[in-house]
Image (tube, rainbow, N blue to C red; front, side):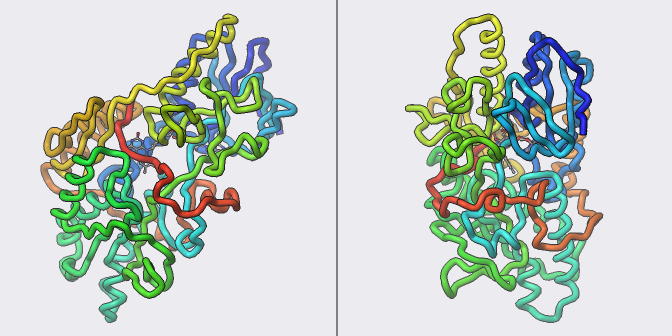
Length: 460
Ligand SMILES: Cc1cc2nc3c(=O)[nH]c(=O)nc-3n(C[C@H](O)[C@H](O)[C@H](O)COP(=O)(O)OP(=O)(O)OC[C@H]3O[C@@H](n4cnc5c(N)ncnc54)[C@H](O)[C@@H]3O)c2cc1C
């Protein structure tokens, strides 16, 4: 198949992925004398930090996604192809996709990350993940399907399992989704399900480490745990999920928590593309890059964002998988492309940490700023809302989100609880139906010290 891209005498830069990194790079190359070709399997950019609000009925999916073609309307050197990249052929400077082959002069891999189940097959088969908009919508449907089923069962143990929710992973995603579920239990479910005894519904946050929000300050960790407990969430630290069978999440050989609703937010791997040499891909499936984001062993192949494994003295385990890192690497690479075309030396990446934050619920958030400054409560919550609103793509999305949040704040209601597409468990895979374990068989073992996508200041 021909991808029908215009022939050009300018260098062609192909970017795989239009997440935070790919989008910023393509934008920053707008005035450069290059042809920019972006490939993504979706025709929209997805604002992942707010996925949990879609999953819990607080926001519409459309308000956290934005059509890629609309973002780039008017950018003359920009071309988009909606396609799945199957592999790269670096020998022929070609990307192989499901719609045909695309030649490049420079290739930038910005494919983000995939959920890592650490080889726990029973969990991978049956847990829900939240990496994509379809995942979030499926999760929303599934929770409400189970509440409907809870009304029908005569068996108290089965009812308990249908109502209970267990979230594994005490990073920002786990903390944020638990908080949102607790608000749903308090404000929404009693109105919709007066026949159910919601005191039976327990929400558990299971974390294998010693604290929640691992990479944040001690103050934030303690405050977030306190918020979670105030909201009635059972925080189980130093507890490792081991297997999930017949509505039971086992954390030892014999001990378990009963649940039909298991949400896995415990780890991610890089989403490295196929076709790179083994030495270029680290164990966690991130792509090894040097300090200018060039893939080791190549002159014209780069990786940025979550998928890039840039190990430095300052960051011996690689930079955290965060939106600001992705955005800043993209900005730096765009500037370096300009230097390259002018025959100048490239400058190494330096991360400017603007802080991190996580929200637990209404008027409850924690914020760490550089210089060991911490605050929380109402001002933390306002800061979180403001930063996330500012960084959402598109004016319409900002307005719709702001209005949605204002309505929820004053009415304590989450309006979006439709079961549009009833969902079966066992299909909670990423957009492609793949988890990282399936993506590549040699999955590292479950190790809480491996950095997972962590908190949380978006923008940068
Ligand atoms: C639930 C959740 C909450 C988060 N919260 C925060 C937060 O509060 N703060 C924060 O800073 N970070 C947060 N993160 C992390 C943040 O979203 C990532 O660090 C960021 O998205 C990385 O950007 P990226 O461009 O590298 O990858 P992504 O944004 O993941 O983009 C990758 C793109 O590549 C495309 N793609 C992948 N493979 C292929 C292929 N083979 N073919 C075609 N297209 C492909 C995907 O469709 C996607 O559009 C969160 C992540 C999740 C999942």
